[in-house]
Image (cartoon, rainbow, N blue to C red; front, top):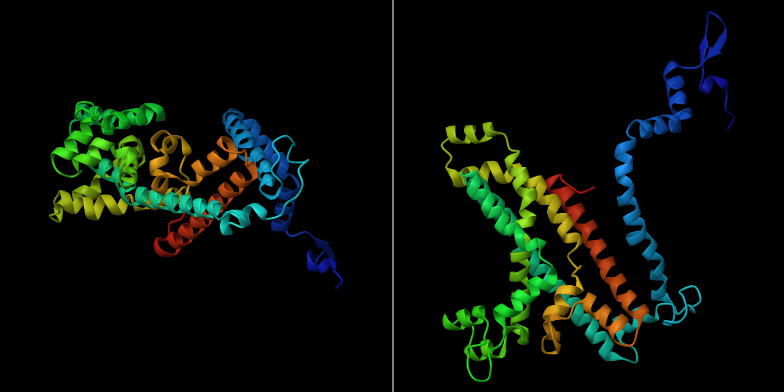
Length: 355
């Protein structure tokens, strides 16, 4: 196809000449000087871009550069050689995790870790996600600024404690008793056994030594640690609601519960959806620090997760870095698919999405 001047130029009948369309001339000028405009914008707001530099460096060094080590998933494990020097092994690590191969116990442990990871995350989503919303609604109903500030500080405080301190407190609360009596038993274990929620034998042996109680202890301690801090986002969304919405609801005869249902919750629905999508994104991401500090060999069946599985085989036992990397990679791929699915469902159902 031949391109003619009349295809992109305007013909002037009076002067018998071609000229450029004014709108096209503006577009050409913008395209020609695009990077000049970008440079001027950066120079104008250079302080904001300077503040962005530390975050860019953090993402480069802790998020993007480590991706190169994912090549270890497809290479022979050799802690002496670098990833470049190792031989390509294909999908042998993935086959070993999924199907066992010559080591069926490896596959069983991996699927057990995947199941525990999903269950711990799912229980955290079901019971842990609504708690910050409930706390934010509660803070909104406290009229005294002093009382609200005190309550907020009390609920925020556990978030600023280290994981070691938090797990130490949990262990002290549910620790086992001595062989002589219940004198050394944790105060929480004593209380639960006194009201009959836990048998005395289980409390005496230690709740953290019983696989049936690990998930409950993990979730309750997690809610205690993070619910107050996570409520900040929802409380900020609530206080941004216009007072006229409450006044209109009061004129219609709505009480506090009706205002909460028909005014507050619909107003913060978009915030809830966005936070839910981000929470689903980390559904299969459970850090190994807290689990390692709480679990033991007696509770592997309910406490062992993918991160502790990777730590155990990648560092603590045998140094199988490729196998550990493959386990983490599979876990992250499933998490990515969950984010895409949750975002798509939210966009179709509520017209609100993360991207």
